[in-house]
Length: 254
Image: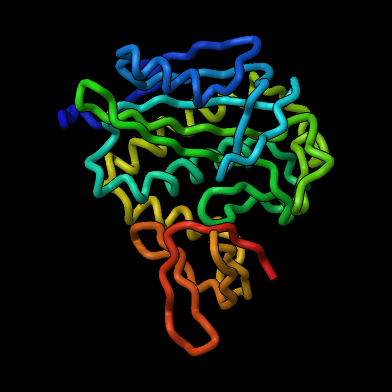
């Protein structure tokens, strides 16, 4: 696998393709990668007909909200990619917080990368990767943010930026996200800046020290959220007093 030695990117190093409608911005990015796109490509859509969240869950994608995906090619050695979701969450949190009025409820990150406002979800992030035929690796960061509307049938409390007093448009929010992501990826520095990223993540984390439930594919685990390690693993203190590292799962507070 070949890596670009110039890891520091600027705003001008990224491109943006704005679509009116597509099935999924993540799918478009993966298609572009298979066709040989060099990466650093943002794809946004006003509406998605087949948006999806983690574990294949559908993501409501009506006009007025932000649907964006970023294609990266060989963003870091594979052993460092585990910390990338933290850098992404820090960038999205920064963009969301920058458009909220001062009187809005606190914006926080729920592990690993859900953005909450007043403990209500306003953003989902789906990261997907694929090995390409040319030996390189495509990684797609999909971001859906509730700007003007929110789903009516969510399994958890949800909100949108309009409900929190922000009158920002999806296009204006994307401009903030574009800049914040460049800055966060530069700090992450292909995984070499993980300590700074995890420090920033902890500063705005939700639920550290609280009781949580982690739903895994085959069971649910209860305990206290101690924090994260430098690779982004959730550290759960179980009833027996031991610390269990968790790489993936759905976290419920309280």
